[in-house]
Image (cartoon, rainbow, N blue to C red; front, side):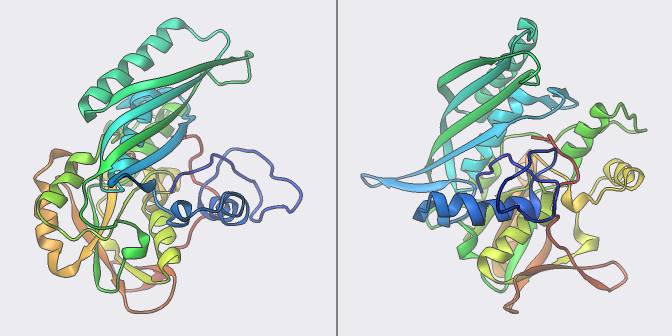
Length: 348
């Protein structure tokens, strides 16, 4: 779903005001969308609650999305705010089953920003766009007073042509669907935190930021009946699955032993008290496909380098309960709820 970057330090929204603070995502973001933005801008395209809007113009099916990037720090292991902005928007289009084509970019620059910093960011954006096969065709620039912009904020919008033969979205999820993830989780959020807090781990951890249209195209080319796709950005796997479970009113069951987390990320999360299920990713997604096609879907995903680590982590159950549950390695079960806030703010 397109995200509005607001947050609140309290567990519930005030009827009179919203306090802006670090954090966001999770239950509070869901409340903002349900109580404020959807009622204000009611539209069938928004009601789909997906990563972008699916539109049809003169018989052509298009996907349209927008996103804003306020990551801190601007540069981190594996990427920076520039390639993050390109990849994030390309991936929102890919999650709609659309081949990304054109992007816009709006820059909010803080007075006093070094021109060399801006050049590094724009150079990385150009390289990321070339890698993803998209063109940046329009944009805007604004400058704000020193102390009011934190260097650079970037807003992007993207348009792509939907190549999926059928509709892709939470409304298509069915009991019996297999839940697949495209690779190991948590690297992006931990990479951001390591730089922000000056932490060093035994093994280097780099962001997984990458474009995701290629693995989605591989699923479509293999004839997989893709029901839903969602990139695992802010709030991680847990938040994405909770959004889908609530939108569809179904129970999603996960197997802890199947969820891929690299040893460096797992160790870092244990030290920092983080749950990898909630840590952001920028090059990973979840796919819902019929269980009968899960093996072929995994073969298609593994044929692409960015999703070579794809695995099945769970399934959708018959129970009419809007929740996500996790079966632990020892056989116990617990509810994986949506966080009130977010473990790591300013990560995208």
